[in-house]
Image 1: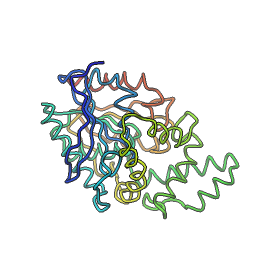
Image 2: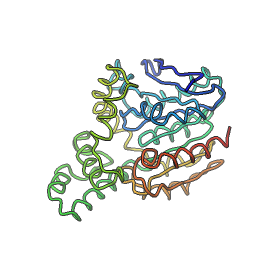
Image 3: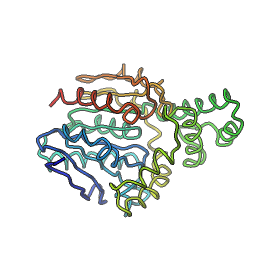
Length: 318
């Protein structure tokens, strides 16, 4: 495949050099900025390489957010907070519009990226043509309570005394946070994933996330060190601010089309919260599409359907 643009760049955002990869078949195509999850889990390899067919219709921009991957180095822990990430994202949107000669670009978020993307669209709408999110965050505190309760309920149904003891030890989250922010969350997420709340496919965080990143040719050796070191650092320092989102109270009016592609079985960012929020949203166009055979990652679990609908929803606004 020949691309009009296929460049990895380091650009200053918020006073820190951050890495992006821009790839597209035609520079005339619309720009689609992907906001990865975590915080601290870059999906640059996935959107640029595994799903590279999207580069036929969009100029895809994959960004390692501050504190992870190629954007790990030189980041002070005090700057790992929600407001700084929103500011970085707004600065990146303006940079892309200028560099790629666009008035507006599309924003596509996954998991934590839906929180960042929703705030970005709500606060800085002027250069955003439309939003699409999966694993949609709605209410940070309630999100964690429901996810914990799902894990506990499934463990009790299975008579899984080890998991029950682990969950009792870490305790139910308070205001979206565990007593030990990183260790508590990782323990709960492992149990939640074990019972299908993260993916309908069997796997572990090692097999599904860590190993593919280690094998990826998208990331340099130093990028991979940044991924390994940044994951815990980003979650530890960012979670106390990112867990406080409450979109039904903060963000219901949007100036651009707003689409949610949600896995029906998601208990990482629980789907039980999504429909009421969606119903409260005011936007020029909106849609909530359920992926019946997916949990937290419909892009990975139902990729062909997901990409067909993504094109259908966003390209109508070009």
